[in-house]
Image 1 (cartoon, rainbow, N blue to C red):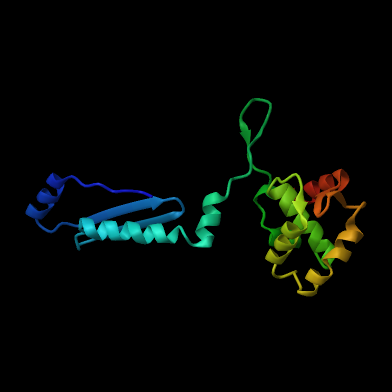
Image 2 (cartoon, rainbow, N blue to C red):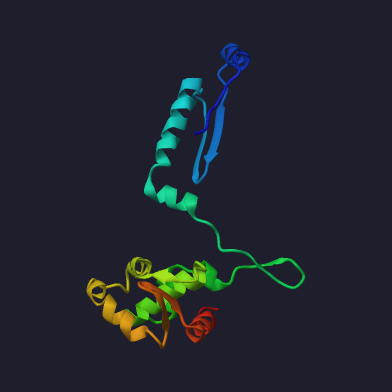
Length: 183
């Protein structure tokens, strides 16, 4: 929790001077607030604003963005970091479009590419795969949930490896192929 402390001398000085434009800028994680105007802001106004910003952090969307970590940097021979590859910056919907997804197995492969190439996970669970498939709203169809077992079985060996119960990864050949297609 952030705390804001004000010095009493500043408050007295504010009270003595004429009404001047006020300007406040607050950035707390993914939340930014900026105000400029003629109306003055009191300490209680600013404290109230902080309590509202604090409640925003309880929203799931903001918690996810706060926990999101960027893709790890890659390094080139001279020691400078290389820019992220296009696949590292693509959403599942964009990956599905680039791969011209038409079927459930196609979407599962696109979701696996999103998880392993964009998000740099070494493996993924069945639930992670399904949740990622659902994010490609233009391609996902409700029956895919019921057919997920058949979809996974059709991909095992050729495109997916099963690491343990409910945990999968792309085969090395499929991983290389997808990296090339998404470049």
